[in-house]
Length: 350
Image: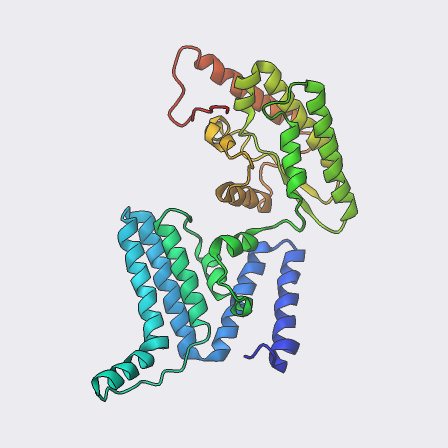
C-alpha cells in the first residue's frame, strides 16, 4: 500500500483516524490502542502474507528475548542472542544476494542467488527491535506488555519517519491518556509545595496559588479537553523530616488547596496516587526523582487515571490527608529508637 495511493489516502488513513478517535472520545483507551494495532497489521498484510508472517515472527522472537532477559537473570547472554537473531534476519533478507554475488566475483564461484524481494519495513522494525534488546540487556528499558510492544514495532507511519523511532519515545505516547500537558505548570505546583531553599511559608503558599491559577487557566481555555492530574504522596515523609511538623502540614495544606480549587471543573480528574500505601509513601527514593516524571511512575499513574482509581475531590481530600498524616506520625513514633526499614533510602541535600 503506497503512501501516495488512493486507497491509502482516501480510505485507509480516514478509517485509522476516525476509528482511533472514536474510541478515545469514549474513553476506551485500550480499545483505541488495539484498533490502532489491528489497522497497522492490516497495512502489513496488504503488502503480502509471507512478509506479514515474517514481521510476526520477528516480533515474537524479540518479545521472547525480552522476557528471558527479565526472568532468567542472564541479561548479557540473551541480549547477545537477541542481537544475533536480528542481524541474521536482516542479513538473509537484505544482504544475502549482495554477499553471495561478491563471493562469486572474488572467488570465481557460481553460487545461486535467491533474488529475495525486500520485505516491507524490514530495516525499520529490525533496527527498532535491535535497539530495544540492547536497552533491555543494559537495563535502560523495562519490559513492556505485548500490546505496547506490538504497537511500537508495527506502527505504520514510522516507515517514513526517517531516523529510527526508539521505544522510549513512542510507547509512552500510546499509553498517554492526557489530551493536554503543561510540564512547567505541573513542576511549578510541586515547587510551590516547598522545595529546599524556600524559607518563607507565606511565599511558598503564594507560589502554590500562582501555579494553581496557571493550571486553572489552561483548564478554562480548553473546556473540550479532559485533564488528568496526579498529586503524589511520596514526598510527605521528606518534608516531615526536613521541616518537622511545619513541613508536613505545609505540604498537606498545599495538596488540599490544589484539590479543592481544581476539582470543581467537570473536565478534571484528580488522583492521589497511593495515599494509603505505606511503602510507596515512605520510600524516599521515589522523591529523589525530583521531576516526579520517571517512566515507571508515569505508567503507574496513567493506569490509575484510566481506571479512575484513588480519585480526590473536595469531599474526600480531608479524610485522605488525615490518613497521610497519621501514617507519617505513626512511622516517626516507631522509628524513634529503631532504624528505618530497608526500603527507605537516605536522602542527602546538596
